[in-house]
Image (cartoon, rainbow, N blue to C red):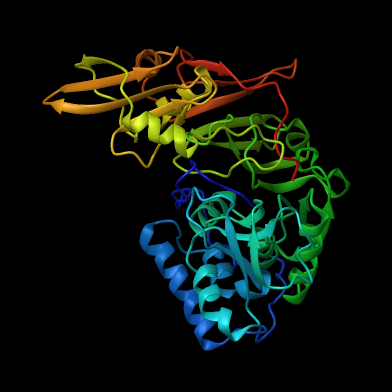
Length: 439
């Protein structure tokens, strides 16, 4: 699974969904497979690290009581990720330098244990390499091509998914197998399918889930087309961003079913969470909620970013400046930022800057806003786009729409998809292009 809210930040969690239920104690539900009594390497130190991770998630509000908490307490992450990468180079250093740590090596164990339970994302594959049978040690250059998402993001989404024993679940984008393992723990492995486009990821997940005593269907294929052979599914979880909801996944959703996925543009800055539900009468309902963090698109997703040189330019260079009595929108106005991303695409927020700073890499336009006195702001811009005017245009339309953070998703008969505010006054078409990563 992959996620990133912007080029410099990998944060945490979504709030738990009010529909979350504690279901493990249901005496009428089918029993889930049990983990081995003492998983390999599950020492008291490892168990304590896992418990501390869960406690931090609870303290942050990312995790509440229920089956997801029980799964995260029980699942030995060192069996799912016995090897993982840590970056040894600075963020903008090229070529990047990495070390592949191995839990079986005493010299690596302490650092890897901390990495696996830190709550941060965990990189598990470099440049599409085979994952099984690797030699640990340094790597140079390349990129990380598979990872396990931040635990706050994963825990929050799994709670909203509302997994229950006996459900059929499709996990799209296998990654390290954490979501698949949690689904097996809660639902039982007979109804779980985990799907990834990379056969190396699939092979590793199959072996490591088997070491936990789980044997879900672990298959290689295009994630955006799902896996109809064993559908329909009660729950579908997509762990990469898509610009529109794949129709094949909607078609594979069972009555009463729910699907979750990050929906976004090529910008990583303002994601939305798409929640698709098929009612018991067969009709489909969708909503798009503006969120702070979400999964990122993988291979094939046209991803924008701010280079180190462009970040330096937009934070220090001179441009044309104007004074404004209009305050920049707060970060918490997530519905506004989500609408901006779709109505005026191509913008990327520099979250590491002290002031509100946004760039448009395609045309080299940029804007920064800083407070200069009480209710007075200085807006400095450069390039052909007037980003400040674009923001204010969307802000006015968003306020007229009732400042929504949740939008309705409409699936038109001709295949089009639209997001619309509850009062219908703010709307946009979702991209008709490719659905991004096919994991």
